[in-house]
Length: 401
Image (cartoon, rainbow, N blue to C red; front, top):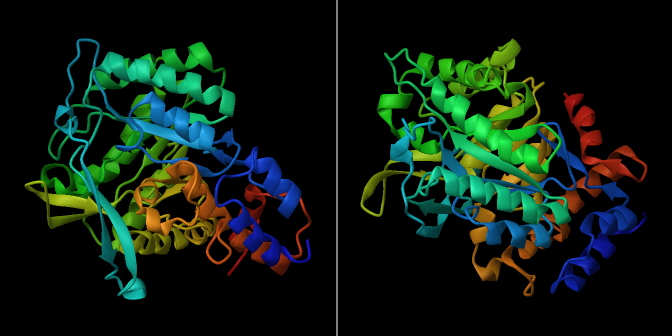
């Protein structure tokens, strides 16, 4: 393609009321780029997905986003339980859905003064019954199937505090096997599963203040899940939080996951969950997670130093395709977002369609900071032929000094 800049600008304006369908076919035919990628070793039609949170807790949201064209969808985080209904992490099942979006300004050196956005909410995990989550999971799989959108459950399992040695393995066995049962009734592949390390852990000193405790979590949790009765059929992703320690410890966390062996090793990682401010107050609660420029700056800095072999799904302040591309350069093959879907209407130039369609329009086609613009610039730089996929970029960036 000789003048993709003109075509991209025209497409951005032309699709201001709706995206082409199927999106992936149009991008391949027009720009010579295959959006096909992978999430945790499983194929996805494009790399854009919704992260677990307040926007992923009912089947209507799943169906709407599947129709809009997302590549994958991570469900609200389930709080694990055993067969008798006991939940060691029940405090994380807070039934609060209110969200507040506000502007935030970067404070880290490389992004100091940069304007961005953050969403704050009080709720943490799934607050309804365990059965209702299984029903939700089943319905989500059903409505996503016609649109070839991957659906991923998210779970918070028991974590022992510093000084505790007992792991409540019955929660791991029961919850994992029940989710697997729902999956296997409708799908034949391995079940993808996100183990959520909530950013609120960073503010709970009884959990997160001791480094050795955190590092122990990162190798014990995969072993307990992989050694359940259905563990061989699970593709486990560990969603790592930004701990309340210096940046060096984040690298240590990633390296611990990388160095694990056998069943103690996760199948992929999700990096990195939001920052935590113990002085920030929201809805009468002191201490709140937040995002914005500081989050992506820290994440990208840490990932730049990581000699990665584990598959990676990126999250953290992905509001533009250009930021997603920066995560791609550091090894990510998928990008999961939450704040983007809450931005004010004025941020989106696409005026028709759903919020998710507007987000995809902005992410992909924006002529200045869109994902396609970044991909095509790199395609020109290296003289790549038409038809390459996102995964083809990874060796290219790995060989850069």
